[in-house]
Image (tube, rainbow, N blue to C red; front, top):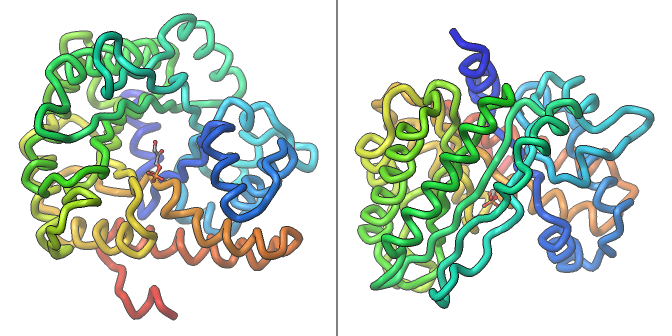
Amino acid sequence: MSELNKIALNIVSSGKGILAADESTGTMSKRLESVKIQSSEENRLKFRSILFSSKSMNNCIGGVILYDETIKQKYNGSTIPELISKSGAITGIKVDTGAKMLAKVKEEKITEGLDGLRERLKNYYELGARFTKWRAVYLISDNYPSKLAINVNAHALARYASLVQEAGMVPIVEPEVLMEGNHSAQDCFNKTSEVIKKCFDELIFQKVDLKGVLLKPNMILPGLNSNQQISSDQIAELTLNCIINSVPSEVPGIAFLSGGQSEFEATKNLNTINKNNRTKFIMTYSYGRALQQSALKHWSSNINDVEGTQKVFNHRANMCSLASMGKWTEEVDKN
Ligand code: 13P
């Protein structure tokens, strides 16, 4: 087993998933301000280190994705990567520099960050990172995602992934087809399948070792503004079919993003996926909002209540962990 394959499996095996705490300062500021907390460097560190020192880190979180600011911070004398590895989790880092408008196309985006990436990766490795994330975003509408957006983002994701493997780390490849829009679940299935297939064509073309990659896709859902209602069983079926049709069998794990689903929905849908999982892929979570929302709300009501905040976070992490094994129930979530 290669070193990269070992790292990838350690992150997603045994009921573990990923805590995505890599919100850029702009996004984190919005999250904090939405609960009336000032977005200072100190407050961002305070909230995040409460999560990173929670009990559930030991059995539910295999990896934590950090933002550049956080990987360089210290808490109680330890660096943040040291704090994370104390719980047995692996430190990851977001290395893209954001999605920007494509030239000549008004609405679609290309993710940037390849310039100087080789040097930045070396630095992140020295700081303790062993895996990375790069997120491409795609809109769905009648004309989108265009072949242009699909091709250029796949190309960038593959260039990123091969540099990351060269630096001794596992790349998370995240092609996120957004929930915004009035598209049907079938549209989401068709577009997501096309996007993921193209990503793997490029990864293979650029000689990326698929055993040392984790895929972070969206689940297959109807658009937020569509009137379509589908059951968790249908979501799981479409999502499983999409993965089976588009992901090569060498990939060790799939870690879904929550993408705007509520904590409850993201957990329930992951559980249904795992109850019906007929593939060899490990299917787990790489959630940002669906792991942090309630904890942030609780913390904002009393920022000195470390224990209370950790209790809320531990519950969410435990529920996601059960869901990653298909063992979650609504009753246990509510108690
Ligand atoms: P959400 O789970 O909040 O969608 O965030 C995951 C993520 O890392 C998006 O890039």
